[in-house]
Image (cartoon, rainbow, N blue to C red; front, side):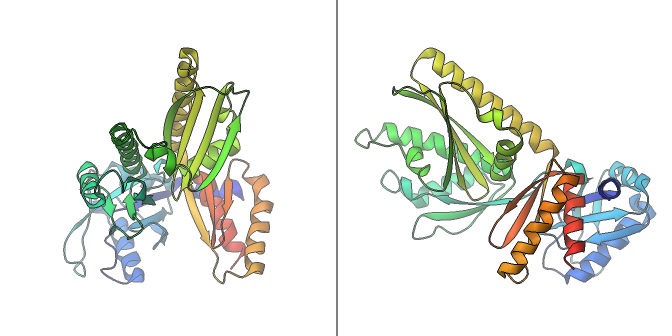
Length: 335
């Protein structure tokens, strides 16, 4: 069964850039079917269109023939055209296995900066720094929702950490630096190995939360090192990993090597991992238990898939073909 689902994934492409909310979802699925069946678009017979998905503007197209996938990918540009749409819309078409977390949302807590700068001005600076991201309004508690690709969010988070460092230099009277106080919020996991009480050298890595969990579950040695404290603080879709070592030169070099190792591992996983979300319909205790037991039964068939249970859903993380098959089996069993 798993092999069959994996083969199906090779006949599937992921479509991004679909205009959201212009027509009903069923009609948009029909428009996509028509587009990818036309020979002028290098298309062919479509077996199934999965739309909408949990990612806004993203659809899965499964063809009857795997060869059509190669032809569709060869086309320089796909323009979605239909008389029921106000204009033409460029689409991004890629293999199912090439896509990783196309869009994430993170809630940033900017309250830690309120004594050091004007938050409204900082928000404008963030918008200029990351024009590809979508920013929500600044809330009274200092929170702001930010949506976009994970690489863009990672760049923004690193910019804020550097900003915190520079502002803290101007405010020597404060004991903790802003980015240290930020890390007091969220779920913290920590790995300690024979660390002496001494001034510590800090390195920071920003990871996608699901990639972080995947690394800790399947690649735990990535976060294990002598004389180093490695802690992860999750804030929505982003996890900040802090690497601390003693203040010696050797310790500083060691923490840099650990940081590089984590970064390299994250980059590799970015290229091969996919995430699907199975939402609970009724949110009842019995339904949640049923879904979780089913996931446990499927794990031997998909040993490299990680399931992360939450109160309202289960996230499935792994190689795209495995995730595709795992999610399909869960949905089929629970219909």
